[in-house]
Amino acid sequence: MIRLAAPEDLPALQDIECAAGEPFRALGMAAIADDDPPSIEDLASFRNAGRAWVYDAGDGPVAYLLAEVVDGHGHIEQVSVHPDHARRGLGRRLIEHVAEWAAREGLAGLTLTTYAEVPWNAPYYARLGFEILGEEALTEGLRAVRAREIARGLDAWPRVTMRR
Image (cartoon, rainbow, N blue to C red; front, side, top):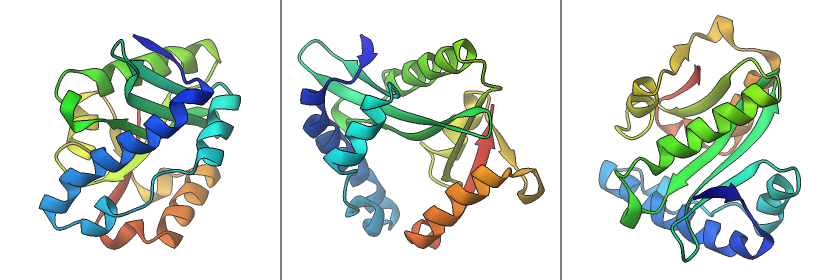
């Protein structure tokens, strides 16, 4: 079941993020696997804004999605599924849920940034209808998102911005 995150869910979201990072290690992306999860404070700010959703398997969250609004679009800041629950469509369900939220909010669609060559990143999102944006199509807000990612060192591997 998809629901808004509750305050008591936030430590579980950190655990999901750490577990979801581990598969990157096999791709030679140990820095991503070792990256710290979002802080409780950061997660709480998404939750307090009503933009943090979890997939609860009955005994707590096993996947989550964080969103913000960037230049009139719902922007998927993070979507993570615990590897023990992967390949069951949970990420897709969360993305569809946030697409419905964006439509209700009158937003023009969804955007996200992701790794271009990681199979469960850009190729996966393309299957869900996202298209890669060229540099010339990036809005000011998306440029700011990319600048923050570059500052964090996430561009050590090719990244793309996508929109649906």
